[in-house]
Image 1 (cartoon, rainbow, N blue to C red):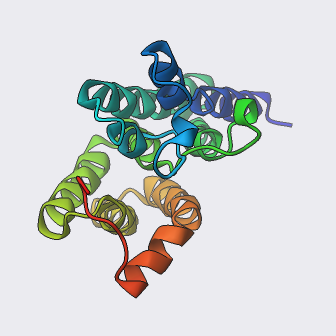
Image 2 (cartoon, rainbow, N blue to C red):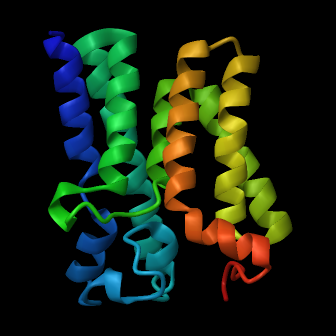
Amino acid sequence: MNLPLIASAALGYLLGSIPFGLLLTRFAGLGDIRKVGSGNIGATNVLRTGKRGLAAATLLLDGAKGAAGVLVGLLLAGTPGVIAGGLAAVVGHLFPIWLGFRGGKGVATGLGVLIAANPLVGLGAGAVWLIVAAILRMSSAASLTCFAAAPVIALLLGDSAIAWLALASAALIYVRHHANIRRLLSGTEPKIGK
């Protein structure tokens, strides 16, 4: 039994489970973000409250908890801990124990994981998100494209361990975007700002 690896995963999951979007909107007196828009706890849904500052804070904090999962894993178990802690942080955001395992879609947390695990991979994926969002004006399309690109970027950089982390994160994020994928295919996905 590899206790440092188990501890990396457990701590990564607990960090990922912190529902910053829900906490920030409640502290701001906006009530339960799960009753607004898509019902998700992430930055895109927080933006639907009209509070850009809260949405930006949610984005940064959700990314930071993913990065924290990676760094804790690195300290406890090296590269295997990076994978375990980072992936567990994404799982924690998607399925937080505090919210009955119903969380967000994992994009900011996943990007935070990738930036901490390999900054070039994370920043490359983030650049893909920005380009696709600027062209299509759809957050979901940008998110799906950036996570499809992340494993490829990691492989091009010769980082096979992070490629596996990126691929596993992408698979989870795609599962949580199943409704968005259906809307994208049917042409009914809303654009950013609508």
